[in-house]
Length: 226
Image 1: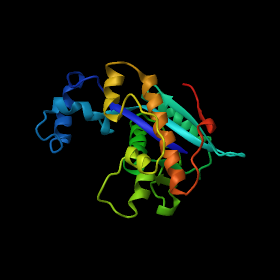
Image 2: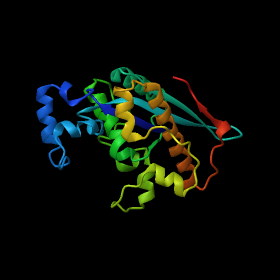
Image 3: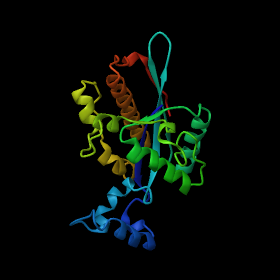
Image 4: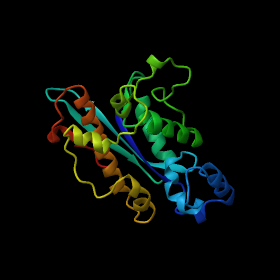
């Protein structure tokens, strides 16, 4: 299962953040902000699971048959607990040996989902639970980690990798830096879900390239409506 998440700050702007959490935000980001104030820096709060929330999880399942395909579905909601419960239910319905794959998933997507599940009182499915497991028992793939080949110096974006592997991707009208604005100001959750689904498709295609396999044709990719 290939997945991607989209996150935003928990509040529309810094002024709406409870005073206690404003102070905690200032402390948490004191070394990252540089010249920016805590208020100015708050638009990036979605990166931290303590101050952000998940608004969309998109997943892609490879399908068999004569031609390999990909079925993509999104869980998107203003109610974070609701979408986490729906995503958890999907994982519970799958084998415990299901392999999860994401770009930078080990550093971001997987731990972020687990932290927000704990905060929302949602039981973490076995596929995401790594506590007490041996490294070879954790079925997590990270397309960024695979590209590093043991080199931990640099971050390589999904956009760059799709470009160098000649993976065609549609020119989106938004990027990751715009998600918070599109959500809180423009109130377009469906638009964000579409963007998230496209990242899932791109990651799945990248994984195919890593394996030396042909890309999945467009007519074999099914996007399930919200």
